[in-house]
Image (cartoon, rainbow, N blue to C red):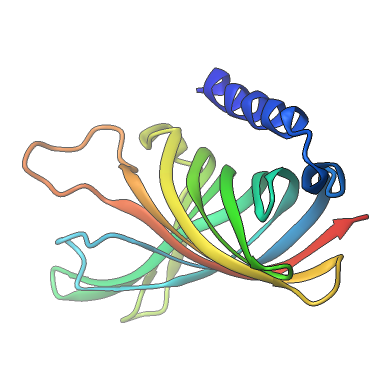
Length: 211
């Protein structure tokens, strides 16, 4: 998978340098930083009574590579918090849980500028799990506990498809929004007949390009 990501980056870079039109020469590759809020969830698990979204954050760097007029490729490397909250009942006792899954995410977004400052985007996201913790609270007595890092019980790799948009108020400063739908079951050993549980996240944040 590392070779795949490297290949995508090399391909995008080659396309950028191969363009000899005035539009590409007047729009060189730019680099930037971005960060914002994640509103994440996990697809429905029948064992949970009520699933809720969890708030987290994302932060990282990106490169914007023009490949044609109004079209660019933007690979990113982000630290991104996924997960969900849930309520359930066990033997008559009510519990609430908060699952926190931290990933190094590598989105590769294909962007099209509708107007110079406004773009839409879509593309794959490759994720690599770095931490997994679960906090459980007994709602009857208020006691809570946090699990050790159990990432070895989950799949290290996560794959999703993202769609989004962004608007730059200035040549440097912009607002971004993106939804990423996970396509990979997070569980490493899924029991036969049970439904897959996948990551989903809505992201909103700010981006800054260095020019």
